[in-house]
Structures are given as structure tokens and as C-alpha cells.
Length: 246
Image (cartoon, rainbow, N blue to C red; front, side):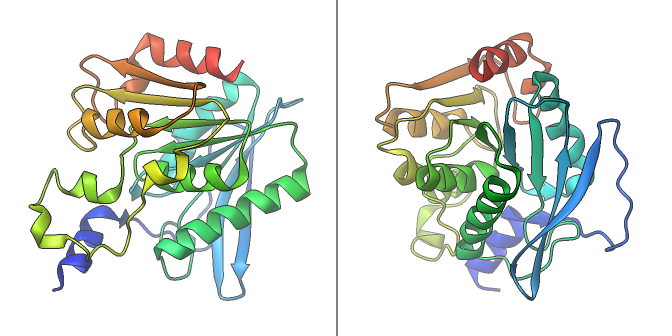
């Protein structure tokens, strides 16, 4: 198996759902579908609050589907924002071929549809883990009101080099996700959240990304001892989100 396909099997770990799977959440929501192409469908959940201050568009991590990520992302409605979280192609009920171009094009398509059909007061883009690369690219294109990146990486090459010698995959990655290049010269507020004990996306990669951004409105919050999936257990995680969103 070529190295690029092996790496993609490691990077992308979707769990599919039947098209008639019924979602259940404690938060009021609507299931929606975006159609960037006639033969593809991007499944999404729209969590709703009364009199929202805006919409948080959430790009999730590399595992599972909206069953898990709906629970996680819907917690952000406590700040009086609607939340829309999408499943990438091949995840959950979403269909179509996943590629870096489709990653980006789908994100832009969904953002544009949300802006045109819902006309929110604000759109805040939120990326987590794998989704930080897509969120960074989209933010660089559309200049959102704010950008939040949880456990981000500098680029995919930098991330993979923590697991495999660079010579094995240099110039062979189909997904480059060069987050640093999308955010170099930006002028919207950026919040980066990362833990020092993250063994999935090393803290050093997120710190490197932060240092590459030439933006006085950026902020890095370091969680000493924080791991990849437990930042929300830290009290200051929620405090920082409150301050940033307000």
C-alpha cells in the first residue's frame, strides 16, 4: 500500500451512519444537508437557541461522526450562539469523495449557504484537531468575526513527522493542510487552545502555528498537563471561551 494511502487511513477514521439514522440530543436542533455537488451531500446539525448572538460553525476532529460531535459542539450553545457542525465526506451520513480540495470547497460552500440563508449577526469559525486545518483555510478566505482553534497543528507534514521519519512521506501527502500559510496575515481575533501533554497533536506544533501568525489579535492559552481530549475539564477552558466570545 502506498504510504500516502496508509497515512490517510491513520488520519481519517470516519464512522458511517445509515441515511435514516435518528439523531437524539438534549439541545434543540435541526438536521440539515448541504449539496455542494449533485452527487454529494454534507450532513450537518444546527443547534438552536432563542435570540442567538450569531452562529458558531464547527469543524470536528478525525474520528467518529455527528453522534459524538453533536454532543461536544452543542455545549457551546450555553453562550447564546447557534452551533452548526458538519460531517466531512465519508463521515456519518455525508457522501462523496474526500480530498483536500473537497475539504476546502465544502467548507466554503456551507459557510456561504449559512450566511445567505440564515443571515446571522456574526459567524465564528471553530476548528478542533483535524478540523483546525479546514477552519484556518476557511477563515483566511472569508475573514470571520472570530476564529477558535482547539489543539491545532502547524501543517500536516509537521504533525505526521512526529510519528514517522520525514523521508518516508515527504512530497507524498495528499492532504497538506498548511494552517500556517492560511493565517499568516490576518486581522480577526484568533484564540488557540492547547495542552502541554497532548500526544496526538503535540503542543509544539500548535505553538509553532501561533508564532507564525502575524496578528496582534491572536491569543494562545496553554493548559499545563492538558491532553488532546480533556481541555474542557479545565476550569479556565470555559472562562477563556466566555471572554473570547463576549
